[in-house]
Image (cartoon, rainbow, N blue to C red; front, side, top):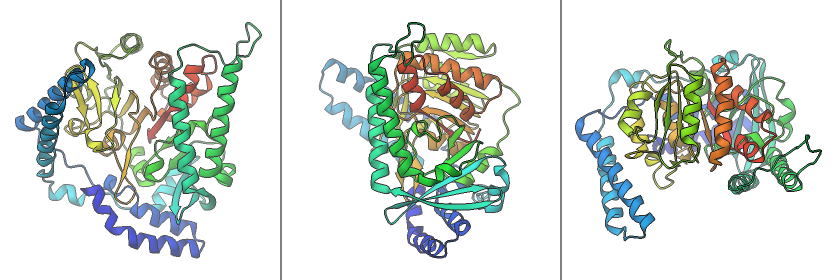
Length: 450
């Protein structure tokens, strides 16, 4: 409801954006874009009451979904189960809609601070992409000021983004390990080279539409990208100008600034979760347990929704390897599959303190849906609103076996103090010996600020 309510301010914002473009005032354009982008992140989250009735509703929903999935797999009729699931989901929604905030929460909303954003950038470049009248405008902001570039069309950008995700999804299903470069045998795999050429072509087209001349204005440091909501699940690692950079994606510059100011917990305890039915998840969990001596490990036989929620509370770092499902019809029911059924966004909103950083080794867990005036809904959006400063997640289906190696590479850097974007950059640069790993590394996106 809060996301949809933002659409009421769209007409006023359109007038302001048009005036900023007519005046050729990039700073004014940044200010007005930020005033209407991701405003739900500026409002403190209202947590559903952690009462027995609400917890029971979510548990019933998990049970019904588990029976529904089993019946579907066995070819049994599922009409009655589908109707029961919809009924329980309606009950959950009604329960959440009756939740009240407090006056203190209302007055704590964060206010726009353009000067604070620019001052906090340092060596970082802020890239804010704006859709207006079918054209994309790109603002590149530094601590010294803001410059505007005109990029491609909205239609072309969405086309190449969707086609790139489709191609990565197909490549993830390849079963053979095809080396990109096999210098030991003195050969180059022709199929692998053809695939790489295709990916590079799509990456170039994406860059032309999304960044255009702004790609030459990025400097040498980290980059924060603030795209329109519909472009959040772009595989940004395919863009040639971004492949070798530490890149993070944020719903707004203010949300990024807030994430920068979140203090990590003093206790550096780690949670590792392995969901059911995922090839390589157990090996992945065991390897990460060896890396983190203090890790709490919940394997497929122990990873129930309630145990996972308890373990995630206030963690410095958490890693979840599980099947992920994005619900386009209702993103707040997007979920991660646990032993007893789906762990939904509604479950995560019961957390008192979200984990500081989270790695989601789960297919499509980085996908979000736009709502209202460029608002985001989904797992990533919910975690950001709850206070998770950094998330690593794929925006397409990934190869389970390849993800094990990628996860180990990511955690090697995270454990040594790297940010999520730095860890992903380094993993990409070291992924050239296996085509599946190469593809997986480009399917992941770093969201947030830490």
